Image (cartoon, rainbow, N blue to C red; front, top):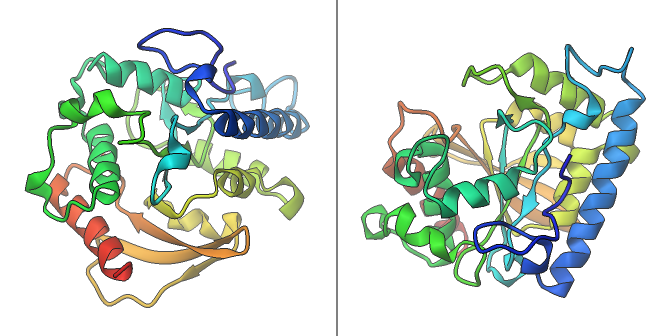
Length: 270
């Protein structure tokens, strides 16, 4: 089980030494959090299993890319679950896939969920208001992990959906969130967000879990239903949180995702 990126240097692999010394300290704190998370989950195992055929050592952890600290704003994306990645580190696996332009057999430009993350992150970081001014995601990806493009990413569930079905396993997600947020002291989802300390959070249709995360308040908003804005109080500050449709939602075009999120962010930051 890979909690944080390994200490192995390779041009296409995310590794510990890719990070600054300050960022390595954050990786160490995340590793400690993940170990405590595993121990808490083990307390809920029955005959070695946590839920169905899942056990605590199957978890798929996540975090942030190098140069995250250099970004303004620091952006955290929060999705639902990984697919087919039990026991792996999500960001290490995806970093390799992105750099090789092969995401589960698709090019990055064909992989809607992943290209949208790149578009939105790059567009916000570089104040690009017009979707059509964006380069292709495959042209941007060489900069991932540099001062030009970095962000944090976490799934609300660390269980990977290994069923081969791309529809969210809501029963599995619910069970994980229930165990991981039992009390303020063991609210590991909130603790991970707190450690990542973002300036902007973009979530993907997970508002039904906000009460479990805690400290989230809805903002007044009269726009369309593509997004819903909130604030999340972390480290004594109110952080803007934008909940969007899930980035894999094929009925909504990339441009609509981009415009609804980026326009709201840029308008509120004027």
